[in-house]
Amino acid sequence: MTVATARGTAIAKQDRAIADNVAKIEEAKRRPSALALMASRLNISEGMLTNTLKKTVFKECRSDEEFAALIVVANEYGLNPLTKEIYAFPAKGGGVVPMVGIDGWVKIMNSHPQFDGIEFNDLPDVNGKLYAIEAVIYRKDRSRPIRVVEYLEECKRNTEPWNKSPARLLRHRSLIQAARYAFGFSGIYADDEADVIGEVRLVSDAPVAPMRSAKALPAHDPETGEIDEDVARQADRAAYREIDEKADTKSPRQSSNDATGDGPSGQESDGQEASDQSQAGEAVTLASALDEIKRAELVADVNSRVSALQPLLSDADAEELRSAAMDRIAELKAK
Image 1 (cartoon, rainbow, N blue to C red):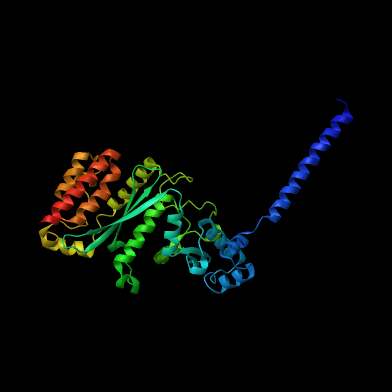
Image 2: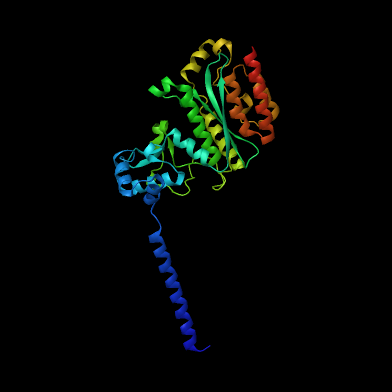
């Protein structure tokens, strides 16, 4: 090959590369923007959509970047801001975060291709009063469901909705938390989580697609949402060690119980979850865990001990522990 031929070949190759880049740029120009996609999806003009959102649900946005980020998040999850499935909420220190109403959470859960149903189990205490709700989500690609229990005492807020309909709102909270664990939804927040907004990342700083990096979730596959059980178990152990370190700080109710030497009706306080051996840092075996369940005298004690002990066991032992817990709860209710 002569020098002239080689030079001609190189120039032709460079021209093709330039042409390809120009074609990509032109294609990007023709590609609709996030705002255009939403306008088309909602069957409204871009100008009308922008004016409506900035005057209503996105009025907290103080910059075009925040507005655009919320549009992208809404598109990512297929939410309609005009029906308040998603709206802007001001974050402490500036910026906004995407807040999603219960209708929005139900929508994104139902639209997930692996969603295969949800069940709710109300958990009453020995007096028949609701104290927790378990949400159970089934996935088509898993043999075992995802179970999440939310406790009324931990979730309830001193607001009119919570005071009026505590069971309904607790069911909403259990659904939302279960959906997060089951599908890896992140970067969006629930209506009644305003008290933690100051601790979250601003929407303009968060990754957009897919938004699956919430630190509250265990490590999981970003495509399937499958949780890495080993990492999750390690995280649970760390969390429970932190709880144990704070166990010496008693609540007022526990202190009043200690003054008489016992809890309600002469039984252990429901805050006393772990056995002496687990508090001492000894290894937890299935036998010792089952003994803890047998010794529980309140339904609340059973559930709290299961929550504390099952992350420390193998999957098979944890399953047997949950079965024993259900039997013990049935015994307590029969008394």
